Length: 199
Image (cartoon, rainbow, N blue to C red; front, side, top):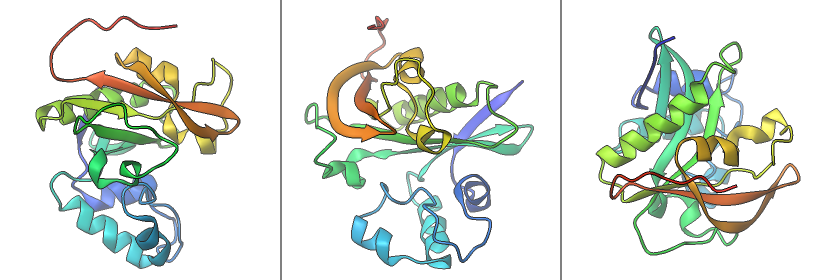
């Protein structure tokens, strides 16, 4: 199966993956970490869609999308940390002063799971961040030790997923999701090197 990962510049494809079935619904639309909390709470219904449409036309766009045969099947939210709510999040530490990019949400459409889409998304996100000059990329997955994670909470990814893409644990966080601690995983993009995986 050929999976292509591209920047999320097509609003309709983003809406297919993370938008509501009804345009008036107040679903996340993957805005909760991307914009400030005050704006996130204020935006209702179709205003949320319009905000995402705006983000798709900004540079960089709000994430990357995985396609199979031209059909959007997976989403990953990706952006410079400084312009996300992680810049001020008290539970997610800053490891250093690098202008890192954050990778914080994965979504794979039903019917396409367990086909390597998440792995393709993380590799595509890394490639895009590197192409845009990011010195490093970090994520905040659950450290679930192989235990099953509630599907609605699995959007942050798992430590094992990030490790499989060459990320290393850089710090603990104060965040817990579905009973599992979240860890800060980091991949240096400044130079090529073999990353040793930590247990």
